[in-house]
Length: 213
Image (tube, rainbow, N blue to C red; front, top):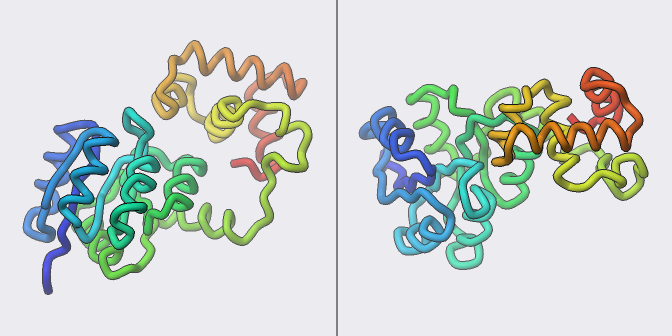
């Protein structure tokens, strides 16, 4: 069995080194990059079978890499590997064209198997994430375009709302969105005011009722 040719995209050098070590001889790593523009150019040049990429990086993140490569090298396949299991992150890269999404709790052998499946044009998801994707593509859209309460929130406020409603602490939500915890707190206060809610528990219930999480 030939080894998939893999390209790594993550803004943490130690993490890329760890992935290389975990995968060992299961793949042939043909390149790596730490930011969007360099990744797009290097991927197009290397023409790997699969790109394993993080979702959150400076310059637009994994979605920007996928969109940048797709126009120049449409045959390259993408597998997202992230600490985040937020619905927006999962659906964002899948809609951009990724063939799968797994979290960084995955083991080395499981990751190698996922890369091989994506190279063979199969779709791969961590078990819990598969439900998010299935629901999103089988259920009617619920956010915006018909719900005036949701429509009054900015895009960033909706992003913060989903993370907080899923139970993320302010600092964790801030890391996911690459903003400060104080900014997250400000957005939460604005959301609570606009929706006339008192606390994050009411916010979670409100979001769940509208299938926003």
